[in-house]
Length: 87
Image (cartoon, rainbow, N blue to C red):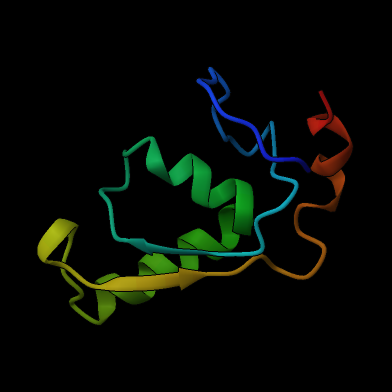
């Protein structure tokens, strides 16, 4: 990893994976939001589904007036993606 500046066209998705991020502090978004792909890239689909299920059961709020949650990966959840990120 090295510092750089400029624009990128890279999109974080579960298929692309992540190399450096160990977790995300994020707001809650609708189930169809593209933002969820980034969360799935970090934590895996099952963890995101569990987090959203708990948020719904707890009546958490959405968007800028809503609650925040910490998404952490399952142990070894994104190890398989790391090799495909080198550029």
